[in-house]
Length: 167
Image (cartoon, rainbow, N blue to C red; front, side):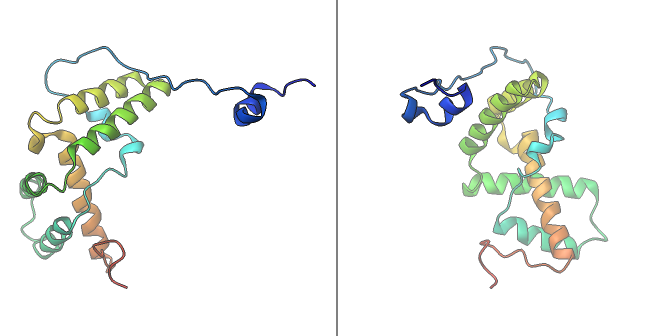
């Protein structure tokens, strides 16, 4: 009997007494200097689901919707910074989880041939603990979370925290 093609052997390794290849870690050995430039990374579609979602975000979104006449870009930036600071102080923003997500994203971007974005992900992960309350990725996540919550509330939908709340 002839063995099946490679793809079948990979899917049926127990039958053919063949072990799948070991997981290879892809790494960048480049250390970018200075403040990370995350402009390309923050606009990348894979980060669209990276946003803050907590009771504090819902409260602030409701509060900001009531102040639409006084809401300026500067005020929104200040609120976003305060939100990140309060989430870090409360321990609800897990920096290690964000670092782990960035490491996985970095590897995926390298395998996808996007070395420029992989470098940005690496830079973001390395600079995450320096001044987290001013980190561009965390500020982006807070800003996006607030905007999503405001849109949801403005449409008359219930945010429902925790997710199963509200019936």
